[in-house]
Length: 167
Image (tube, rainbow, N blue to C red; front, side, top):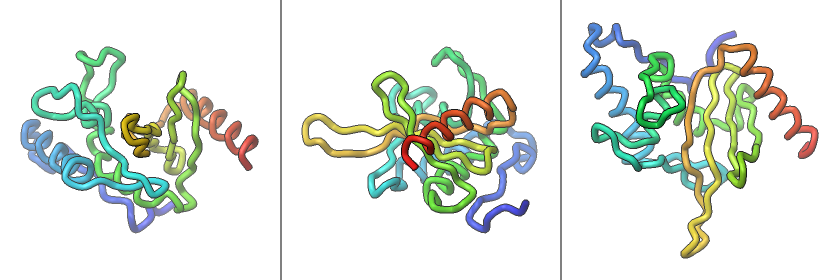
């Protein structure tokens, strides 16, 4: 299956001669442009990244899209996530493409929207309403590849249940 024309190429550490610092700064530069300097929209609402806590001068939303781990302060860089950093914005910019499945799910009281590209890579955003003026927006929660069949089964179940309920 060929990639859609809108899907950016992967960014490899080898493209930077294995220089981790240059690679990290380049990946962050893309994220900063896509979510700090500019912002995508979903359902006609802005998608913003979570800024706090800042770690090494980089927003929490960046670390969630480029690292993994349960402990917020002990996340490990994930090269597969980093290679696909440009995919986050691209998928949000192309939700109507047939290769992107979209559904909502609840995590406690948090309504989260999942945009799953070819059952290969998922972007998760949360619906937010600012209390002081009821301004509606979305917050980027995370994005990651989904190679595990176990994880795919869970995501398919969520997607299929949403589709059965919402047509």
